[in-house]
Image: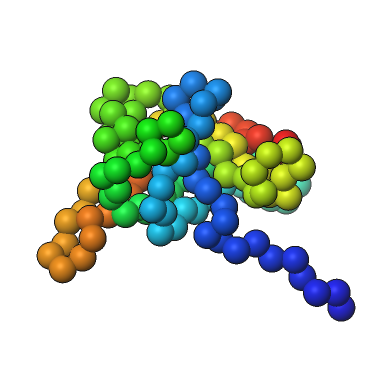
Length: 142
């Protein structure tokens, strides 16, 4: 058995864009997740069960620590994300490792911020979470 090649999660940035050209990292990330689903319908017939598939649906969920001093050229702040949500802007999400061409790991898709939550707990750092919901195919080729 060969030794697996793994990816350290802290090395995979979570990037957002409002124009699919200029991407900025959402910094101080705690976690991000990608979930893809395909709705199915199964009909019982005298030929046996038949299954149809619907359009792919996906979401990117993320959790970040609120950073009040991000690098505005390369990093996105909570205020930036809040503005995208407030304006109902189509958002492009991209994760890749390593950065640049020849990525081993790549997912890109667009959708809307369907959920955004700012959490303030006494004795803890402020965090925010969000969900970008999209449908159709995601780009997995780089």
